[in-house]
Amino acid sequence: MTQKGLATYAPRLPYPAEAERMNVDSAAWRVLVEAIWPSAKSPASVLLALSYCKARKLDPLKRPIHIVPIWDSKQKKEVETIWPGIGELRTTASRTGGFGGNDDCAFGPDQKETFGPDKDKVEKTVVYPLWAQMTGYRIVDGVRCKFVGPKVYWKETYKTRKNISDVPNNMWGTRPRGQLEKCAEAAMLRRCYPEELGDLHVPEEIRGAGFETVSVVGDVEIQRPQATTAPQPSRGDRQTTPPASNIPNPFIGVVEDITEKKGGTGQKKWTLYIIKMESGQEFTTFDRGVVDALVKVGRRETVEVAWEPNEKDPKKQTATGAEAHDNTPPAGGGFSESSKNPGGKSLFENPPSE
Image (cartoon, rainbow, N blue to C red):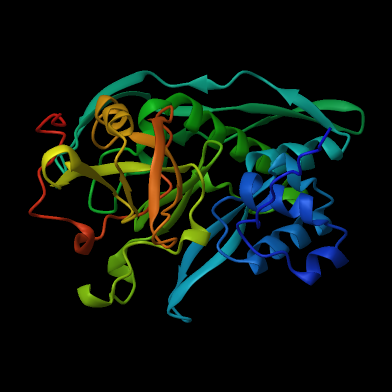
């Protein structure tokens, strides 16, 4: 009886020697870079996050913090920073031994409002609470004391899909109460524990002006500056498709368009489908089923695309499967005009041909 060996593959980010010195083995490293911080761009940012967790005595596998890319105007480049999640604030409050719980979140009256259409012709109607407020309790000298958090207003807090748009992004548009409640809870915990939490803010509390969503971890949207705040390369210098080694599998993003290219004669006719994501990432496939699945989900909806390297060119990606992704915000950023194919026929307006 022969025993088959297990297939292995390299982690998304290389395993550094510093990780071993921090008692993180290669298996744990793979979990960190592919499941806990899948949007991290460098081993250095993951090591920084691990150092933060170690200093704060936090378990990184519980996702207490997030790696967020922010444009640094002094360095003239995007740098990765560490942001606490709501989980860290809750953990810190609990560890004091004096947290006395909290009341249910109080919400203001609901407001129905239609946002847009913006320049992308996106329009969204949202029913949201005008404000949210949470009351917490802290044990002080044996007495359960009440701490009323500040009112957090939805219109002052919600994130837009782009800097030039007032349309809420997917997260704030689909769960307006949940997002605002998280912000109200963070504000309440800071009021209860100013000495432990100081001015720690969670990403949801930072107003989206000048930022656009680039990736997601759980229900926390990670932001980056709009292209208008950073130097723009010429169209010919843009790299519309990132290296295959940096592409998560499955890839999570929003489909910009799908076109087809036909060739061959007689019995050797073929149809190649080109799937273009808003992030600039591009996939190709001969599989009609993959295309049918994407067309069914619809344009500008978030999807998961499973892929494998192209046999003839490993730098290209072949889509092998696709499905909807529960309305989660996309992993990619703004769509690069240089990756459009103006001569292609959009399959969103024209169903795939046989």
